[in-house]
Image (tube, rainbow, N blue to C red; front, top):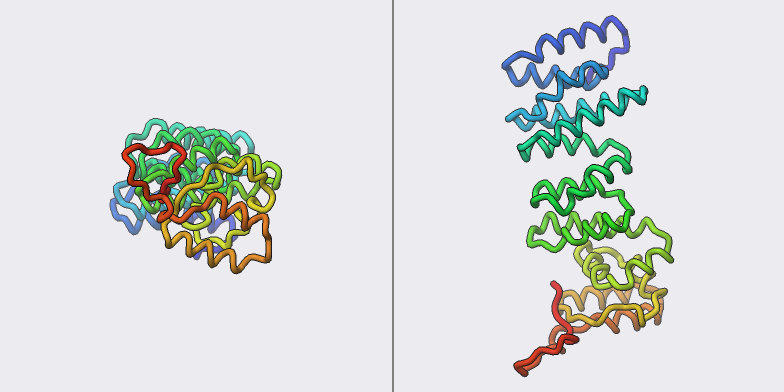
Length: 275
């Protein structure tokens, strides 16, 4: 790792990096991107940006990392704003998935407000691979509208996207005070159950919600497979005695074998399996 703080040495390193950046050899390009990440300034950004669309994944990743390093060192507000605009413009004009993924990786260092503003609308507008990294990039959001969009993206057969979306959603709701949490989660309690199970949590958030939510505000019961029933049975045994939480959970979680119906007509109120 280069750690030389001497100004002359820095200038020489950067000069070498600029010179070798135009090399056709990947090791030379990689080393140059690395050096610019360590010593580079705002003026070097435009030299690195083209590598975000490189056909070589190693170079794309190093370009993203170097740009994040430079952005983190910027102190001038105007330069930071110009950097952000350059990145946003680069994304808007891109038609390549790999290029967009490399750009979003840079955006992860931006403030939450900036990420919510730009990436938020993309949650529901993206295909799976892009949606996955967008959801990951908003892992610290607590905006309920965005969390709803994230939750909607969890309704997929893509296991990686679903788990990432549920994790972002679950972590996001935990950032709220209990009063806000209850109001938002009461009608979505089945999704809290689903997230608690799929993420294999200890159920602390679920228990807090069940213990404090008015049971009249809970959704109708739904049926769950045996393996989920077993998970929550074990979970109940680990909780401190909390009759309100127990009653609330049992009121909405019904074993699937209780729902068989031989009639030809289906009652709309009949519980159904959600997993």
